[in-house]
Length: 238
Image (cartoon, rainbow, N blue to C red; front, side):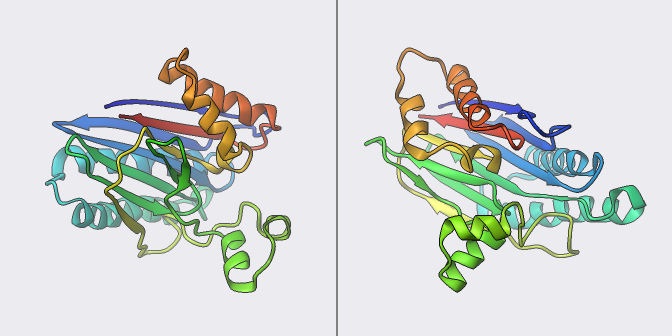
């Protein structure tokens, strides 16, 4: 198992509010992507704090029970960000998305999702599929109102309906993945909103590039599409 990650400010945002972490303990890898929200530098702080708190929980308390561990750790992460957001006016309203993966050498993968960052599977036949469901206004407009994706994006782009640090209690979606894969990809919306799935697969299929170079190419494609948002990608390769 190999893993790679990269984050980029993009071309239009004044700062990068995305954060990511990849850590390994024994035979398990924890990968996290967070996309911060909030004015000034608050989003940057929220995403960084969420990542760092999750990593501390992993190093100190991970007990090979992914679903229970995710639930308990998310409670701690949310409390840390929420309490800081209440402590000072400059942090008011800050929060962050999170998509995380626990991958072990035994073939088990567990995902956690809050917000609109995503996890994708690129299977052994090089088919790409979205594993997580966005907590976003766009997704609600499509599912609830039957609106087209283009129209929903006009109305609700960048509006998320669930995030860490906004409410005192938060629940995330937890998924168990049994299927084997060539790649597991975690990314912020700065990538998945601007780079189509077939282009992602083309990049990952290139045998002449390293994992790091694949991340760089995906970021490059997002920037070529306008670079309108911060861009973060993690690749876990089997």
